[in-house]
Image 1 (tube, rainbow, N blue to C red):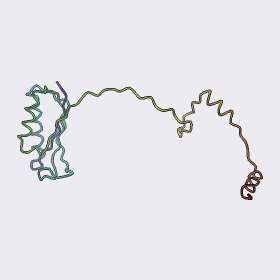
Image 2 (image 1 turned 45 degrees about the horizontal axis):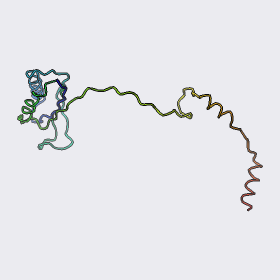
Image 3 (image 1 turned 120 degrees about the vertical axis):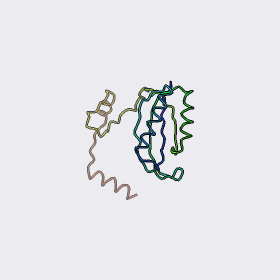
Image 4 (image 1 turned 60 degrees about the horizontal axis):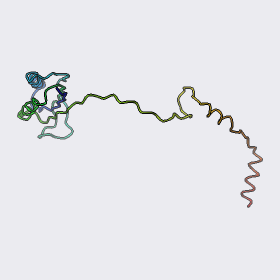
Length: 150
């Protein structure tokens, strides 16, 4: 058996109680075809982003189930014959594969996090080798005179 997700929109001509009855009819139809209901949601009234068959709103129903692929065609026929269903889609739900986590790039030494930095021995040696040289204001003025004087 494969796992499927059925999403359909029921016309807003009917009441919410009738939409609930229609949703239960589809659940019982799937169960009669030896299907297993995994998740079902009650019909939810929503405004459509664009008109479908001249309707601006409808009841959204989502249903997740398992059924044999051969019996799915009967469900499709029933959905297409039903006049009050504006649109439907059946999606094959594949099992979620757990992927290995990719190696991440080296973290920046200048992170904004409050965690302590992990510095390797080579990085410590580089930091120690950097000479700290203070520049006096007089040296800057002499350099500026040389540059601007030429």
